[in-house]
Image (tube, rainbow, N blue to C red; front, top):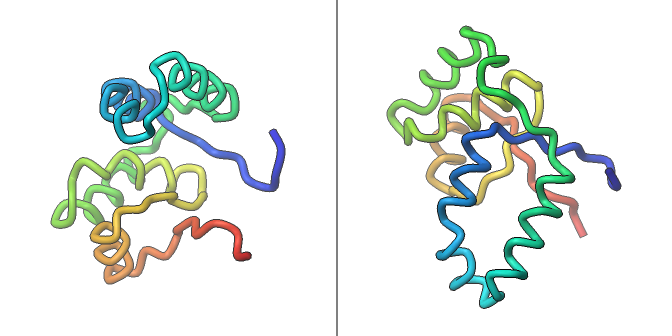
Length: 112
């Protein structure tokens, strides 16, 4: 992997990306073949983590953080806690809500 960052994702999140393939094709204005090729390149660069390796305590902590913001983000937050990583999200509501609860583990990208 090039660069200083390693990106982790859980299997079910990969499935969500695939599930929204048509929306991605429309928004990106790429052909289906181009999106499939990009998906393949993405998968090759990711560390895919099985959900069952996330500790119970991280699941509980993530749920407590997400329950009144968006429970569907619990997995991503639990994975972030498990790998002691940074959460990469464009969801402003999630970032604001987690930040208000003291969660500061966000990937902000490289500064130019």
